[in-house]
Length: 133
Image (cartoon, rainbow, N blue to C red; front, side, top):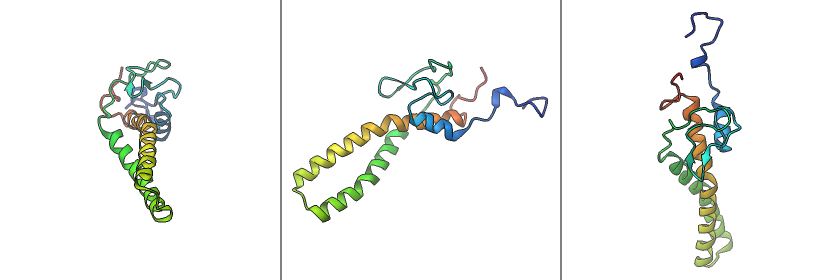
């Protein structure tokens, strides 16, 4: 906390969660929204190439994979139900279509959900993101 109540403490100023989540979902730096968050498909850069914010503190671990499975499963469950009850496709056709949909949706969502997890960790100052430099 700053000694003067009318001046915010720059080391602990408020970080907006919603913009950080949206920036992370767009695979951008949660701080500036300009620099890329990833080097490759899922490797988070050590620091933002634009604002130099350190991002190596993240601990996304298995969270994005669990979220991806949860979302893909909930999106495809109604597709399976409606597809089977209304169209009665051949089992091989249905399995092929669902496999392609599940893989495509998973590949699309996984880096975005990892960015979202990194964004929330940054906004909430978790795992070293809150240390003053």
